[in-house]
Image (cartoon, rainbow, N blue to C red; front, side):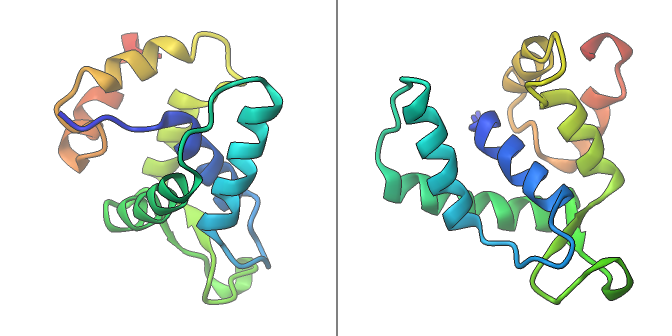
Length: 130
């Protein structure tokens, strides 16, 4: 069973969403995420592991169709991304600013691999997850 750091994935997806004209850099985003956790009094753990995880998530999100290369006409510079429709659905499910975000995360955590394309499509299509 694959488990994911949904807070880190949420951070990465928000950076993609707001990244027109900016280079996407997963490692510094992981550092910012760790700093935010520390400021909230949350345990950070191994920062190098978190940076590596962020890079792995970037690749996974790209390979599984949650993000795609940002077109030049939308501020793409060859080193940044845009959310796909699937990525937008994922962000809407896990976004901590939306009340009730805990339940979709729990449902995703119950899957063998929540970010597997077919698994995500099946689970995210269920109205009761949101």
